[in-house]
Amino acid sequence: MDTKIIIIIITSISSLFIAVFSLIQSILSSKNNLNTLKMIEELKYSMENRKDVKKYQEEKLSRRIDGLDATIKEIQILKDKLLIIISSGKNGLLSDEVISFCIKSRESLFNCYESFLSDLDKNDAEFIHKAKNLSLNIENTMKNILADLKYIDLSDAQRNILQDFKNRLNDIQLEIRNIKSDIIFNFTKNYGY
Image (tube, rainbow, N blue to C red; front, side, top):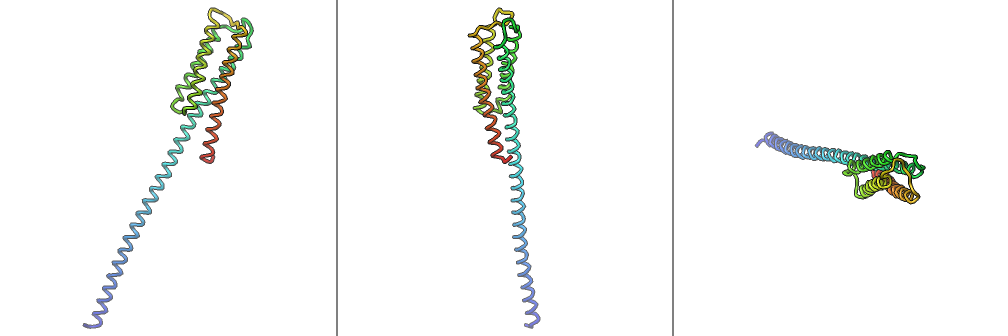
């Protein structure tokens, strides 16, 4: 055979090998690009999912804190009113007004418990439940004390009972404030705010 033909055959075979090698390299590169794109999409999804989870946790935490705040506020209103009742003199307040206020306070605390229960953890719910039950005891006690009276007229023993209720409400309110502070502290610590 002629050397020119051999050179052409060798060149053709070399070109064929280079083309096959380039094809293989292109396929591998394309596969790597697909894997890279897939990893990027998975990373994006993971980051979005984390943002969604964090947003959900922030919203749930916000609702939980709202429930604690609402309860703290209602307890404070009830404590302030109890202080007014305890310090009132004979014929100072109308019995019907006092009973009406006690009913409203009890309803407000029941509403806090019912409205926010799904957002509370067990410990939160326990203290809010105590406050709601105590408000019911206060209402019933006031109804018994003030039965058949137009104006409030408390004995020292009755004032002591109401003061004990006020002290118990204060303890519950303090516990709820501590829970709220712990929640906020832990959230900021975990999420770096």
